[in-house]
Amino acid sequence: MRLLAFIVFVSVMLLATCSAPELAPALFEREVPSLSAESPLPTHTVQPPAPTEAAPSPKLSEPSFKPQTYFNESAGFALDYPAGWTVREVAVGPRGTQVQFLSAPEVAEMPVLPEGATRLNATIYRWEPKNDLAAFVANQKTAWEASGITIHEEAELVLELGLPGVMFSVEAPDADLIFLMAALEDQYLVLSGEGDLELVQEIVQRVRPIS
Image (cartoon, rainbow, N blue to C red; front, top):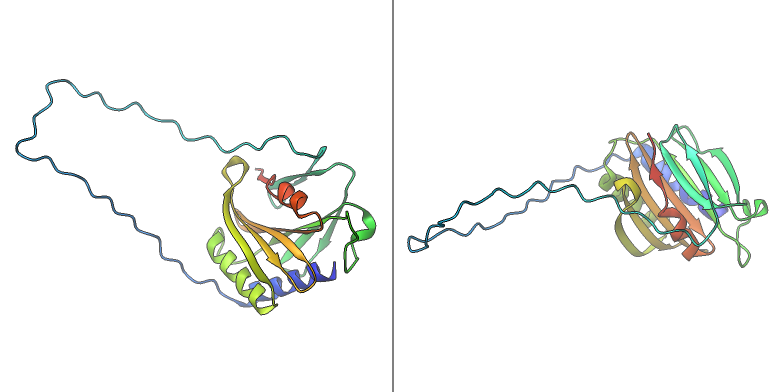
């Protein structure tokens, strides 16, 4: 718990003091072929294409664990976690709150988890600019670099109900962790977990927004 608390502390301090960079939108161009003078004219009536429906949001398969759902209406998200786990809500300074999901209550304060134990934190940040996930992620990566955390993998995801997120596999001085970051309207959600990383990765991908 001391390791995750240190990482959260560094992130909160950097979010409180750093301003996020402005990101320029990417531009895409497409070359449109032109018809030559020798091209034959169509002799039939061309019907306009039928309107297409928006692709549905991805739906996750059934979890490998018996799920229980945590709802946080103030932050605007829900998360499925294994039934029987302990859930604790704590404050993390004036700019954030945190929810702990623990495979057993005694692992909350353990500096090193015993084999088979897993813990996951859901931290809600209030940070400017709002709803700019790319800027928030860049700021968090700067905080990790300053605290000696190495990023092994980074992947952009589309979670349930179309919620965009970025997931990381990182190596901290004392443990390997999984992170997932998402923007929830005027707040940011960071899920971080250690222990059974396959289980952590499965849980964090089950986060979804609620109105």
